[in-house]
Amino acid sequence: MRKFLLGIFHILNGMKTVAIHLFRPAITYEYPEKKSAKSSKFRGRIALCVNESGQLKCTGCGICSKVCPCVDLIKIKGKKDEHGKFVVEDFSVDIGRCIFCGNCESACPQNSIVLTEKYELANISKNNLILNLEELKLSKEESKIIAERKTHNGN
Ligand code: SF4
Ligand code: SF4
Image 1: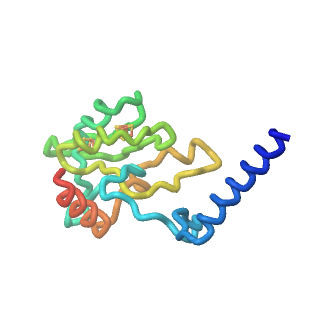
Image 2: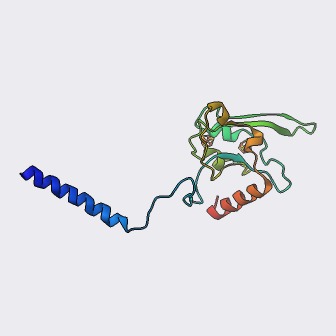
Image 3: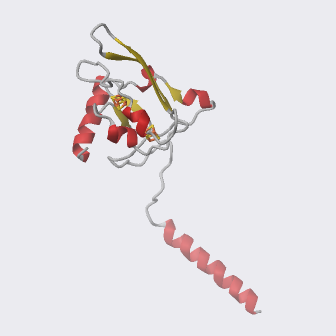
C-alpha cells in the first residue's frame, strides 16, 4: 500500500511540473526555423578577411599555423614575387579537426584569420571540411563587419 501511495505521489508531482511549465514561455527554439542570438565573442567557422581593396590581409607569416594546437590543420602555400614579398596562393583549414580555440585569431598580426558566427558545418564527407582559400575568403562587407565586431570586443 505504501509503495502504491508513493507511486501516486510521484505521478502527481510530475504532472504538477508539467502543468507549471505549460503556461510559461518556451526557452527552446524551433531550430532550424528560429535560431538563438549568439554572443559577440562566439567562435565558429574559420575565415580569412580582406582589406578595403578586397586584397587578402594574410601575409603568409605562418604564425596561426604555429599556435594551432592541431598539427597540420592550417596549411599555407605561396611564393615570393619579384619584390621578394611572399604571396599566398593557397590557404587551407581542416574545419573537421578545428577545436575553435581561437589561438589563430588572437595571434594573427594582420587581423586576417577570424572565427565567424557560422556553426552549421555538418557534412557527409570529412574531405569537404577541408576549406581552401576561396572558401575561406570573406567579402569586403563581411570583413568590415568582423573588424567592427573585433573593435567592439576590444581585440
Ligand atoms: S592568417 Fe595571419 S597569422 Fe596566419 S599566415 Fe596569415 S597573416 Fe600570418
Ligand atoms: S581555432 Fe584553434 S584549432 Fe581551430 S584553426 Fe584556430 S588555432 Fe587551430
